[in-house]
Image 1 (cartoon, one colour):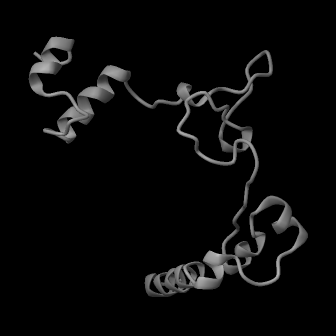
Image 2 (cartoon, helix red, strand yellow):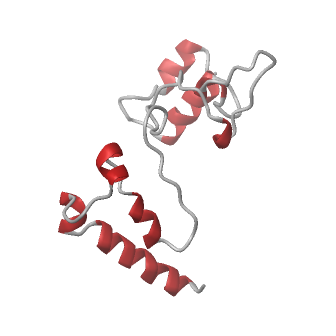
Length: 124
């Protein structure tokens, strides 16, 4: 598919999903839609394979204590336990992340300024 065809497809999907009917949930609903609150027919509107998850663990909760399911890359340890999201922080430790954020967003209230970073031992 060409890029313009992808853009047209995305525009049609966005237009359809932003329609009054889609937002208000009007029209006939299947039993599974009524039970779960998720319209699985939305999957049919996209050509590529999609999945719909609902129930516990279906959303990103912002919690680092949420177990990472095996289908999302979690691997069980020797005891059969799934890893928690806080074990997937990426390269560097928390200090590196604070330093990077402070350098990327200088002046932001949520980041440290140079004096604070020196006090914390993150800068010289």
